[in-house]
Length: 124
Image (cartoon, rainbow, N blue to C red):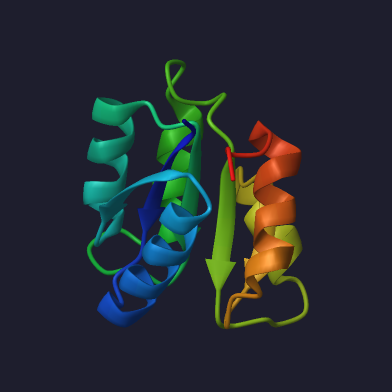
């Protein structure tokens, strides 16, 4: 089973997306801020990280840079999630080390397609 680390500070978004991913067969772990996201990534070695970019404590941009700077963690794919779909955000996310980018509100089928492209599909 593919393990996804969902780093999201909004409880409603975290619960909704976590439930939807679990129903699709993914194991989902959560972190509520960037610092916890880095720590949980180190401890869990997930198959993929879904990283909200607007996080407290350490934002998603910096958390991504720190994860990708760690030799043990850099191969873990990270998909940036942001509600601020501004011109240049996708490029900024990729420059920070994200492997892909998606906007909120989440279109689950589109996101699953991106997850599948990076780690393969979960059993359904």
